Image (cartoon, rainbow, N blue to C red; front, side, top):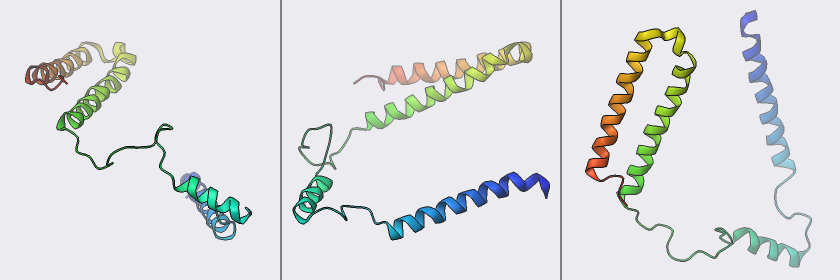
Length: 126
């Protein structure tokens, strides 16, 4: 049971913080409760106004995007994960020896083939 004391304390601390926030939310409501009546209207208008980089938005927010945006995002994630996986390998390069080197070269070749494929298909073109 002693090995779980840290987990139990963390869970208890989280439960106390949750209860505290629920109590504060219930008895200290958010919003302009102490503002005068003419200030409340101005506050509400400011809170409900749309904001995008200081410029009033134009057009519909539900416009269609081309598939290339989503494809580019997926490619970014794939190659970003590659970089994340190469860092620990580089840190333990000496411990892994030749087997680790060969495995990483296979990994890099597979990713290079994938990059060549998407490049040839034109997925990187705008």
